[in-house]
Length: 399
Ligand SMILES: [Fe+2]
Ligand SMILES: [Fe+2]
Image (cartoon, rainbow, N blue to C red; front, side, top):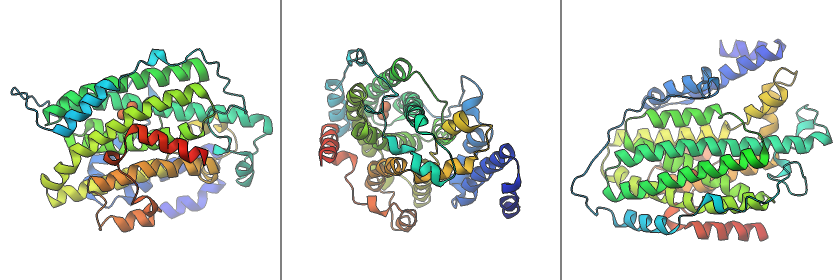
């Protein structure tokens, strides 16, 4: 069935080809999943996100939460490192309204690009048979920047709601106090990204289907550690890489300043996730449960890396034209800026997966086969503060 569809899809009209392409892409996720538990927990979210397109149908989405709110009436100081993070978070608070919002931003100015021009460039487009006129390059740059920042914004809304859930369900009392600061941080991130998109870029894209799947999966999972793994390690880890990429590559000063502050908050968030999970994974779960988490993390890493294809920009630019979804995918896969973007996301993520013990000898060959072996030895969140991260990015930029 699968092969037959593959054979005939090139002779179908573009609209039908695209629908077949979409269904096959979604099916690939199910076929590739080896662990039945991962498949069972991820499948309902994948159906909602990829096939029903729940993130795009309406202005609002309701996700059924199933976790337990955990109280402790003795108020213990039960985790000194989390307590220290809480102290640091209180000192690190900043006001989104105080950013230099008066900065004038022209998102179409190629001399002050918001995102690098080679994220989707003329040469790469030509190679896959898409004609992009020179005059369209800055318009495309504007679309790509708006798309990236829109996904950051939607991810931040996921983080805001997930941080609230995690604060309810976490077993450590010091974690609850720390979690309260993260909720405020994420609220501020929603504020600044939304303001930048509406006041400076004037364009917003809907949530990417794969991002919706991941958020849906962790919001509806009843297990607190899966929420931590999904949000604090996977989504936050990837976001940290993505923010770092844009911080390093943007020439627009307001965005750079905004990202500098957000990155320092996010570094604390990932650090918290690592602290909470390291001990839990090594001491409190069975081998079978451990393996499920190893597989889940790997599937999500792949989902984010391979499937963050900016189809929302495709729909905007080429929906209803003869350019196919498959051509667009090739363009996004081969554009040099997009390749750097995907790579840098993983430099922050994979070392944290290692740090919480999920990069086991059983999993290493899978990561290596997927081209992620080069990130095994990077620095994990506890070894790197937000300030160091910014200094590193500045150094790499200057080199
Ligand atoms: Fe955030
Ligand atoms: Fe965060």
